[in-house]
Length: 285
Length: 299
Image (tube, rainbow over all chains, first blue to last red; front, side, top):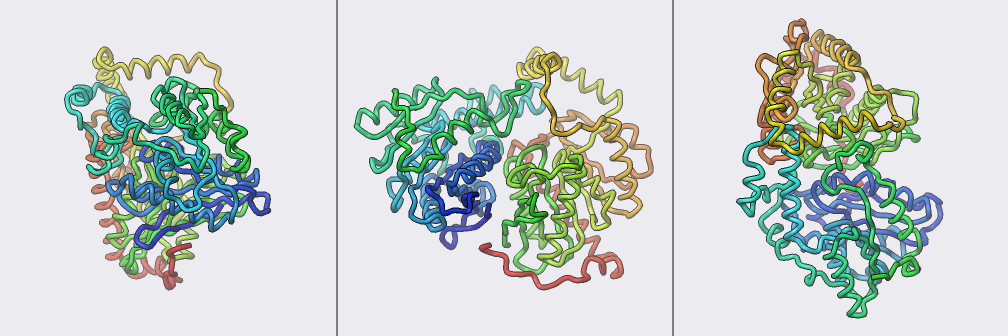
């Protein structure tokens, strides 16, 4: 495991490279594209463990923080979708530089999946496979969910009725939007998220795609179906899990940093060389 | 300012951190240890440790934010130590690294929640610690404060679904068989004793201690309520105490973060200025052996 900085001068990024633990040259490589904000904070340890397991299976892995997130330079408010897509491309170039000319898969979680799908259109010698876990396809709904989680966390944190929080949430469309769950968000990013709709998220035909989402996520399901109807190589995997992206589920025994079911699901789909990954895709839509 | 990711510690238990150094040589030979709460990784809730490190660097103060063993990007502990003792050993490893890389040999510790507990125990044992800020780390409310909190919660019960859920979960948890635990949780009396021992040692060395408490955990505070009966002990005079009802424990609001950053930076600056004003003989230990700061970027 090697911590590193990479990317162009003026936009350096923090990342961690996991060389194959086998000591051999990697047979394949995986780029992990994380979520943002509180979702990134919660999933960090999970991604570490996932990376370790993949490295043990002979896969080279790079995970990183977008500009203005995690340990990377930049302030919270510096984040924007276009810049983050460029960060995915920069991370891909760094992974290829370190892993060599091997098949590469990208695995994106939440907004990371959305960014990866967009970045794959332009990335030089891009991925052979894209795995999207609970992708954010409706930016307006995502922003609303973050704002609601913000109010919910505050109410639970104070363990007392915090007057006006719910009322403000209902009455003001922009309540808490400037820093949901404590992560500052620029007006530019908020506008980009509000404009994000499923029909804006397109996939490059140059890679296969697996969409892993909750069975109840009708937006993701319909989106994957629509793309399959366009003859794009998209698989849909309904995946029920109890992982809370923004907070624990508040049930005894369920609060965990590294949930087993998602770990097994992702390992199963990312261990194989990217070129052979289509064999593991469930195309049942 | 330069931020350098670092891996350090024994080969079997490598720890991960980020060292932040000012662009100019620090004006005072103190660096800050930033330790997160709970099981989250080094950036802290709402990235507060990143924001704090950068702000401290603007004031000439270096810092290292790190993952203790078994958390974030650090390896699992080798075993044999309790989790508090392991945390203290990890912090000493971080101090050794900072000394090697920057020559700085005296430290402040800013710990969120459990992070402050590690700092207190460290300070009781290691003379290199020159200042301690604990945010919601210890609380020993007496009967009146506990009754007041309970009453406020009871009054709010009918309006607060999350509180009802929390109580239900708590009751459910009592009747659900629990799995194995990785560490034996210290009993409350153990925490009292650890606190007393650490604060006594720090007071004897005149090490500044700042105890900061949030409104989200404690709701109200009248007379240093979180010190409870310990407020009458002599070491308590060495503790700068601050309660802020608007602060929330996980710094979820941007206002909370601004208030926390202001308080923490102001405190760190005051402590470092005091160190500058201290007799040369006191500072000599910190300056001895200091060497040129290496180029750190692009590891």
